[in-house]
Length: 285
Image 1 (cartoon, rainbow, N blue to C red):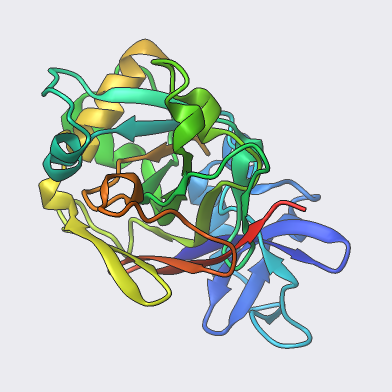
Image 2: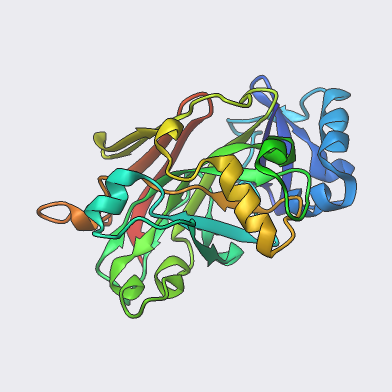
């Protein structure tokens, strides 16, 4: 099953894909957004609700959705993993570590599939980072790696856009990761009925059709179960939480010459078995 968040007319909501149509789950749950619906009702209830209904409207066309929103527009927590592919760690000049590098994103920094990634006026070094995101379906604390997959609702595409000049202001990365509309998330989430435990997911990032990053999840330094176990050691994971698992080598600021995202570019992050997240890039007015 695949879930997505969208706007349609003046309403914002979420639903499940049914062929070329959308089952409007938000309307059936009193207007709850995706993350809150997961926290209130649970993932199984949302799947059951979707399974009992046909599509309410088409995905595309005049009667379809107006725009995609971030898959989970209302997460309580977004955890991002840095330096989680060897090639990227080496190109960044960082030493190996015994534990994953974790930083936080704010929900307001995200945007959806098809929506612009925005270069803020304060930066000239807006870099792409194609990644695979997971969404937590069942919360927990101190989750063992062997039990981690049972806590995952599904997988999606993510572009963890980074303002490299702001990221380098200090040893703390948060300012460079949290400008509005710099992290793209979508177009939808493929749940664990589609992506099975042990599946290897491929990842590719393109700008204007040029391939700039290629990797797969067998190349992660810290595998997804290890990440879930580590994060859930220091805080409880909640349904709807997002974990962004790291970007491979080939980022723009380490290329010669550097390749940053520029106004007019179209950036794509494709994850095998899920789909392609595509965003135009524009300069802040």
